[in-house]
Length: 214
Image 1: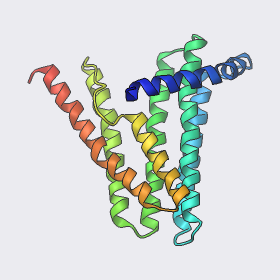
Image 2 (image 1 turned 135 degrees about the vertical axis):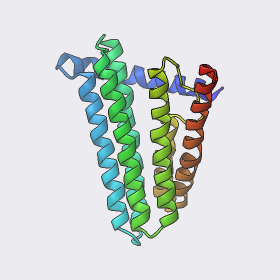
Image 3 (image 1 turned 90 degrees about the horizontal axis):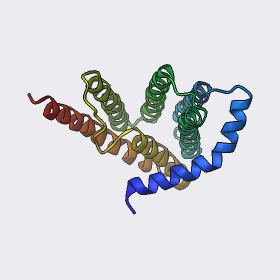
Image 4 (image 1 turned 90 degrees about the vertical axis):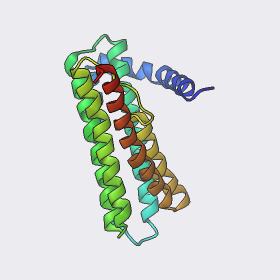
């Protein structure tokens, strides 16, 4: 089974699980935009947990706190899936909803990576702090190049490290840090994002150059 195939199966399982809850939410007036906002708030909470984790250094409680941050990112990711699903099943899709969702996705990712940058700097790991900041730059550029390309009429979804993969890597690195009490797990995740997010941005630039022709 391919990676995309596995993700599709997992997504369909989650949809079947949450669809009844989404229909109940719509009946009481909850909209996809509210769901998007809720996911954003949980990402802010995750960022706050990472910042708090940095203040715990060198306490043995720090890895556990980092793990809680990773779990919160995963929980927030559930809302990220639910808003689009609610929009589709409730025929509530709108141009503003798409803009709102994309904008808060960018804010969410930046806040979480900022929290991790602070965590590393507060714990005295300057190199990992710089790497995480580089990961933040790459994440912004992946989204920016796509948006700019689409503004020029070019579809640009290519690249090996898109937002879903970056979020999963961040959450997994934090969770594994909590499970094994080993910050190296989060450090490795940040290195992967720093390298391959920026590589993805340049992949997209190359793709656009090919489409434009010069």
